[in-house]
Length: 190
Image (cartoon, rainbow, N blue to C red; front, side):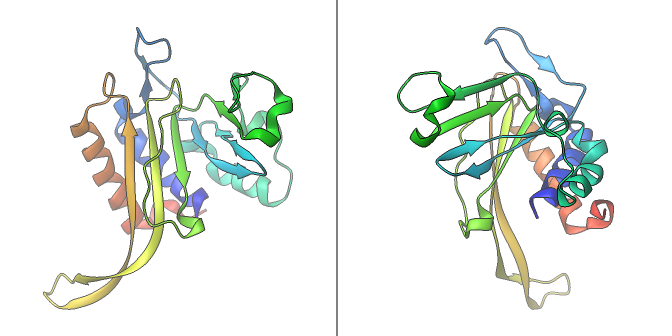
């Protein structure tokens, strides 16, 4: 599911490039030409965010390699990574003490829905323009187009963004596009 969400997000970012922008140094803005999606992944004692580089073009290839256990680190990660622990020291040996590794994706995806969490707020990683928090897909009673009552799977999605770079209206438009892509997934098939 996360691979499909990453691809859907990448396709939506192609149509809304301002949402793929960032402010890394606090002074200047970067409109990123590549769509590199960082995906939050839980590990024992912490979290890493491997980056799917050129996610709008390469997700199928990366998913196939990952399933075949042939994915190489340079294919899902960037060179610049920050390692942060809860004691203020910058050492890799802190892994047991809730180490956090933030790699520079241009957009971050955090899917706690796979753990049954229905909604949450994700914290924006340093240097990233936006992060999307994805909750669990749950059956919901909805009105159908013909005015009847029906059931539909729905998930809560929340985006946290750096409003120095990305405005709320831009995010709303991005989320509308993302919803259309997910609801009509013909472009998501690998």
